[in-house]
Length: 338
Ligand SMILES: NC(=O)C1=CN([C@@H]2O[C@H](COP(=O)(O)OP(=O)(O)OC[C@H]3O[C@@H](n4cnc5c(N)ncnc54)[C@H](O)[C@@H]3O)[C@@H](O)[C@H]2O)C=CC1
Ligand SMILES: O=C([O-])CC(=O)C(=O)O
Image 1: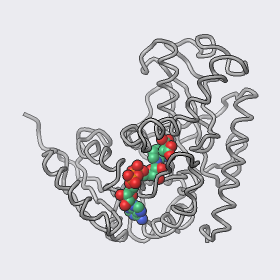
Image 2 (image 1 turned 45 degrees about the horizontal axis):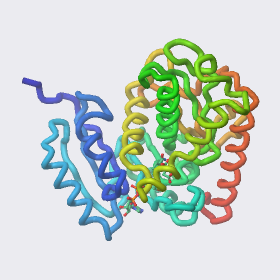
Image 3 (image 1 turned 60 degrees about the vertical axis):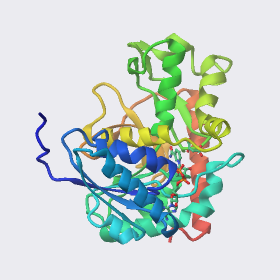
Image 4 (image 1 turned 135 degrees about the vertical axis):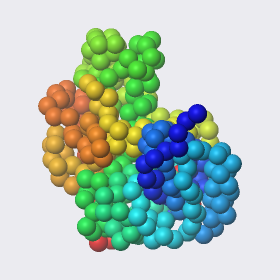
């Protein structure tokens, strides 16, 4: 017989709760996959008024799962109420792209959501809240939210590039014929977009340097440059092409991994990728929300120092940073940075 949890529930607010990602994500959180098997969770589901009834239906299903860790579910269409006292906020709610669009094409449609939600977080969430922006373009939406969340530390805002990281790990493991658990030290640099640079320069496969196993990343005609990098960069578009809708189960799983590692820690001897506010590391201009290799624990993160970037990685990172700067200019021109 398992004992009832004794710790206080953690309040997790999830926006876009009636959407595709929400539907995959919420049962994983309520089951304990995100915060661990000893931590009860109280869920706050935020939707637009038109989708509130659908979110109520998701809440009914969560009840019907009879999760032992689920301390309560509240549904609403008011950000102030949904974020009140929130310890974790998962900002998923926003429009996804469809075939033929790039994620940055969503700036005008989605950007404004994150000004209002940044303010509502500052006014209502716990002072120590951790925020994950999933809605695209995720890095720039995180920048918008952090900018409008006066009084909350920018370090507590992040954007999801864990899905790209997981895609890179899976592609490498498949190529090398090993389980994903044998892969370490992969990094996704830059923007959650087609300009991101998945970097195997410091990666290992069952303890051997990945370049020895699958070929040199700086060799322009090899598997890394010719197949791996474009496959990871274009994986979101490939899913849209195949499914007719953007990735949802894998995105939800990546959110679970991102938050679990942020709180419970990256495994010893490796790191993950997370888009965080740059402090100038690796030459990325201060203030941009950029994906870096990070180690995490207890809700804090550190960029892994001292990695050597080969010419391809350096050029890839610079290209992605240039895109992030252009997105920042675009949202500034729309008046979304205040
Ligand atoms: N960063 C990443 O790795 C990934 C990001 N995404 C992005 O996640 C977002 C959500 O994707 P899906 O769940 O597939 O879309 P969806 O369209 O199925 O669901 C989005 C939900 O958000 C709701 N919503 C819209 N505005 C809202 C607001 N102001 N407050 C609360 N809820 C709001 C909508 O009513 C809808 O139910 C999209 O922007 C998509 O591009 C998707 C996959 C991966
Ligand atoms: O590609 C999209 O639009 C959805 C997404 O962000 C991803 O699957 O990485």
